Length: 341
Length: 263
Image (tube, rainbow over the protein chains, first blue to last red):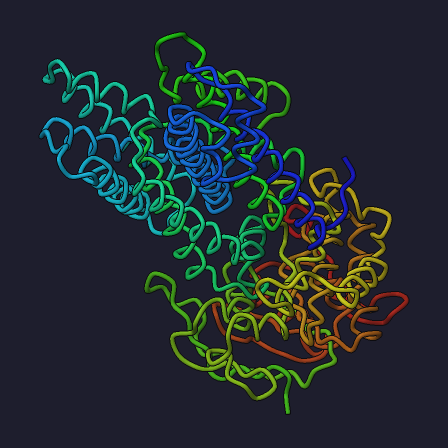
């Protein structure tokens, strides 16, 4: 496909379109659920707003739309945005199309932290499970880079290998912890491992929202440098990028975004892989366009996946990680077959 | 004031000395060839001039300013480097790649304006790649790709261009057109060119001056006639050669001597 160089108006145009896509997806998601609420009235309520919504909806309906579904849609959106943005950054920094939060072991580290908190029964404090997951994720990043860097420069292959090794080790720990757990703990652990957006509470959503937006902004401010780093670190230096400093900033931002998203939602794989690939195929590799597009598309994708997760099987809720894996794995195979990575 | 001035440059890699006290100046506007055997320190010298490696001793001055005191961005406005070949992971188009050369001139969030577009277009015309603008650089041949990197370097609007064995993998047609392009850029744009090459005959034909490196020291620096002599080439490369005059240009021409014949 013939492309011309990315311009500011192009970035704004695509962002507006993808934001509109997200808005549509979000509204549709609000309409779907076990409790049937008439679509037209819901939309009316949304348009007239929070206060006047009561005039159109019954109190029960109002609670379902504004207190249950709406926060969940927003939460899913931020998780999807954070994961796919982090995916874009990891792929660019490691110059490897396979890099992703999950493959780098970050999700596994978070899981160990979360499971530990679940087993210890630290439910009283709203931030105990996500807090431990966050600590686990950050420790993993430090560990992966320590292992990957021990061979001199932190090359992308040694980092990926370090991720694989650390991941395998964490899997063993997770299996061990599961095998010694009983009853309710076991159920909670399993759901956390499969990714569950139903865990979020109001304060989590606000916190995640701030982290996603701030992380996204920091990453976007370095979008051009990211293009140059993809072209080669030596090239980036020659073209005026302070590579070490930029890498540090971007890795920290992407890792923190991943850690926060995983901490609140559990392991949701493939988002950080599929969305960046899809957007790169459609829009090209320029990060000034790729980053906002992946951010918004990641949000839409996870809202759709979560809507399917909570409605596909009547009277029960699937973990959203199951849906993303169901879509993600075949898509990944398609990518592999279509064009060698 | 010299455009490039290197004063007593020392550099060690893993405690192994690579450069051992190297000094030279270039008044600018010239094509300076750098030749010497593998491991003589040619590439290291370029990286030190570009400020990517810091010398363990000595300083490099660009227009009288110490490189170690300049930011990466300031250096990138002065010096452009054309690599041997640079692998691409995600496929940028030719135009996008050349546009990267504008990066040191643009603020963090600034998009390229009309002026930048014009500079990029001109760089592509100069290097004869305008018709490739929308192509993926992965699809290009080695010679075409080399021109894309030269165009990107031109888009930086540098005063100095460094070429690191940029012609090494080109066939003879592309080698000649590569050196012709260097000469054209040097004359038309007044760019100071420093080119590392293994091709002694090309260096002889196209360089105003040649620097011959051996074991991290300058064995000789001067016009091709002064430097490319049987004595110094045999001393530095430890290989028997014949040197005569190029039948048209009159410049030194080197011929390798096959072992079997000399025995």
